[in-house]
Image (cartoon, rainbow, N blue to C red; front, side):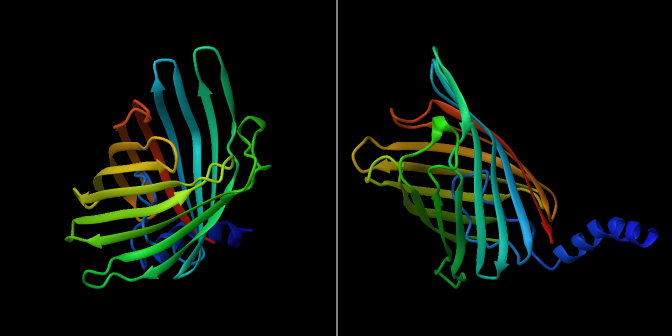
Length: 250
């Protein structure tokens, strides 16, 4: 019994010591630009967030929580699962429930070499029937993006994504772009500014701007805060988010 208790006490410390062989946690939040880095082998990484979005004077959307679960298979591949609970309100109605679950993967394509960026490919697909009645889609909804990153200096990076997604109701894709620069203010605190948008094939584009801060408590735990504005008529007026990400080895 004492031996089992000792193992439980030492587990967090052994996990911390093991993590020192890896860089600090690299997350795909709070910005919309996914990073090219793969979750370390045999690590679970959970990126949890709260999002508030104001669409107009009578319409809001709250996502609480949004959870991205990542699991490292090897140095080149991770598995991904996205779950979101959504609350939509307007002047006369309120609906809530789970969006269809997204399952997918991220795979490493390139290591950074000179002007060649670090690059990865991310793909997800949602299952129409796995979600609340108000948020189910008619068809499977794939999405993908290529994510690239350049190291500008020891403190600054430049990242961008290109991809597309489908809404599960029509065959027309919505193209995605992101462009962000991150800066290490201190060893624990980082910041970013970002432009990104969604360009439907038939409808008007949705362009946005956001910025945020991250706080690294230790190599395995990070807090973040962010917010942004819509830049086009089809965009939300403003939005804000809080998040907490952590990882652990199994």
